[in-house]
Length: 533
Image (cartoon, helix red, strand yellow):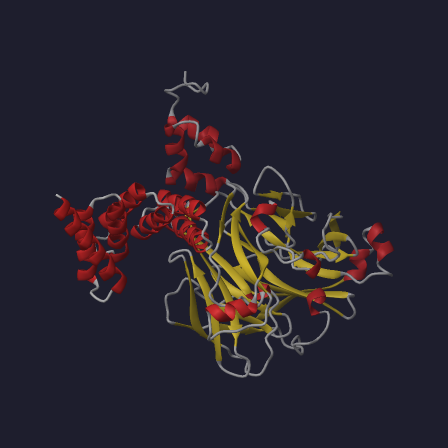
């Protein structure tokens, strides 16, 4: 019997059958029971079997992220729909240069994919100090968005590096994932903002890829000419990213993981007779779009909210809009006596469609959310969610059948970027901690050399020498590693070794004046030592 009360010779087959019936959150914790359990749970066959047996599930998530003190960095309270689940984060995740909440710049949940939530935090910026850093770029904006990803099941969180260009609209940022590891356990993802140049045929895509760990500016097409694109959110459909403009239609990128230099996007116009001017009021209350039942769905309230029309785009490549039904909402409202009492005073607001059942829609009336089967004309449920803001603003989030994780390369890249920020802020110890995390995830020559630089600032010359040596094992032509090791060895009194490193630096790049000065200084010290000897 093991220390955990499980027979050491318990058959793997039986143990697998027991584990496969446990919640995914519990299984993740069970990995630490023993190496055997970890190996069994990490086996791609077990992952695939678990995922195949899990029924799809989802929750409605409040877009407004709460900032609350608590024992965890973040927490997603799961509530049964039509109630709204809310994501809360610890203050220390958002407190740095945070924009005052009185400006309505709350942290915001943008999207969900692959079991991960993408959220943004507005931070303060000084446009004039930014002008000094980037003379060719200027914006009067006094805030900028930083993005973060969290896994509500495993409590894994990463903050993405800041985009080199300011992100202009949260409603134009899409998020798509795909399984990249054995059994689909490693997450590969892209975060994309679409920004058209109105009046032209051009647009730009600002893309963060988990594969590279960097932001990239990619050219794309814009097919609407002088139409003022009014972003109304982005959703993922069958591997495609779909940008919504409730006044005219959808712009779709078929393959957001494509390596093409210029992205070719397509446009799906709204059903005939549904297009409006971009500045038509109340479209966000009367219209919604999303994916469900394996197709793109578009719903709208018409005739002063008395009727609901549901359209489906079934054949993605060669499809057309099919009007599935037009339902009278009066019959539905009075099916529920409480709803009937509210009807004369308030106009229903269309929130979103059910991700698995196209016949079910969610409405907001005052502070109450209703789920409604528009075909059977029945109210299925009602809830009064507690909120930070007056308006109800939620979206459907599919819960994963199996919790994915980020690739070690991405985690290493993110940790290294955080280390660079601390280094630039002269927080040397914090920089060392971040670089150490990066090395733990995936050792690279850059991470070792950067940690060596931080150690050098702390006058820890032995650690500097050791890190530079590790960096050179990974890249024997890394000039910065030779230079930093030369400085460390000089301070440690290893003058001959320091001279060799300085010579190698000059061999790799003869035009380094600072290295030439260092070499001369080391040579002078060697000559003085020889005279004394």
